Amino acid sequence: MNILTTAVPQWVSILFIISILISIGMIANVAKQGAINTTNPTKIVGIVVGFYVLYFIYVGLMGFTGIFQEVTLPPKIFLFTTIPLFIFLNLVVGRTTAFKKIIENIPLKSLVQLHTFRFIGIFFIIINAYGAIPTKFAYLAGIGDISTAVLSLFVAYSLKTQKSYSKKLTFFWNIFGLFDIISVIISAIVTTKLSIETGSQGVTEIANFPFSLIPAFAPATIIFLHICIFKKLKQESK
Picture 1 (spheres, rainbow, N blue to C red):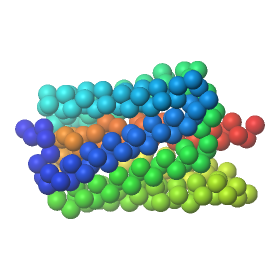
Picture 2 (cartoon, rainbow, N blue to C red):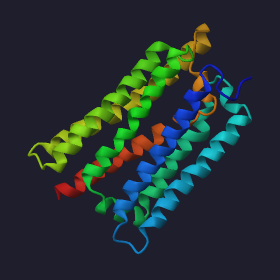
Picture 3 (tube, rainbow, N blue to C red):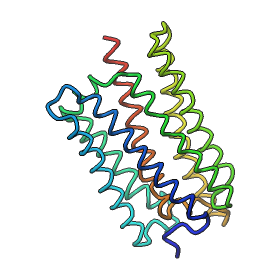
């Protein structure tokens, strides 16, 4: 049983880890913008980065037990990482007074532009190039993420230049981005189901470290960020 990815070159794994760390830095920086009026906004950066570093250590340790490599429905990595993180972000973090104040202060443009980190979706296509995951799944996930990232630049620009249609554009882009990440989750589950029933290639390679950080980090975090944008849009409409 492989608990480390073996199907792709080491340089791809290293580049992926760097990209994940950059993504966390981007999230922490946006959170810092929202905490700019507090006594210590730098502390917010430390909290965000520290949380995700500890979380990634947990994901790594869980991966080394071999539990994520078990092909089950739902996938074990969803049960032990994706779902708990989603619950924590939305039912714990999202309800704190500090978070609510941060959201009030973050410019909507920054929340939208943050989604440029989804260029990381290119790794689905790269992993597929080495035959590690099914082509249909890889291109659905990869192109969807890349498209969302590209479009976020145009939406953020419309907000920056205060176009009359910017809020409506943000709303529809947000729906598109949310639909994209949900479709990836569904596709991963369907692909796993077919793998169990027919013996076809599944997405087990993504359960191997470091790519296990994709399902562990991306779905819950991205959905949470989309919810934040909906909340921000609602605030600004009042």
